[in-house]
Length: 229
Image (cartoon, rainbow, N blue to C red; front, side, top):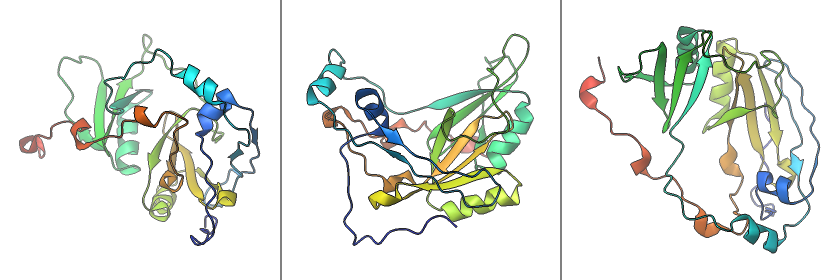
């Protein structure tokens, strides 16, 4: 089981920062205690950023950055040793749906979609080679994609049922808003995280007016007559 959730009546300490921004603007200290073992609890202390951020540095960061017409993350693309094996993984383990792929793409691949994001799979060959990844070690600091989850217990159960090796940890407990995380890899060794990160308040560092939260309009149009094809 993950670390127990804290009593909401306890005072919640929120720091006005985002971890990535503060790593570039201020010094940070981090401690982590994790164990890599399937089905076993793995707790780790999250990064602890104590230094403040100079408002002048924040203002300088956004200099000459015009409002951008971006709406949301559309898809990620993965080079695969086996498109079929990756399709099975993303459908069976994560619930993605196989969708139509434009005929103009005359190379082996597959498109999947769910949760407002697409995953585009491309078959590896001599001309298309992905960077090597470590297929074994589970390190939360590796490059990865992360999915928001509303039932961490159900997701962990699914990983166990499929025999997928994973790492489990809880961070940010000392702040009163613990975040549960599951880390595992797809058939090509790419890291995936499942988390309940909505427990962590989003506090922009001096740029509230620049935030654009996703709306329904970023979802592609759904053609119902092709759903059963």
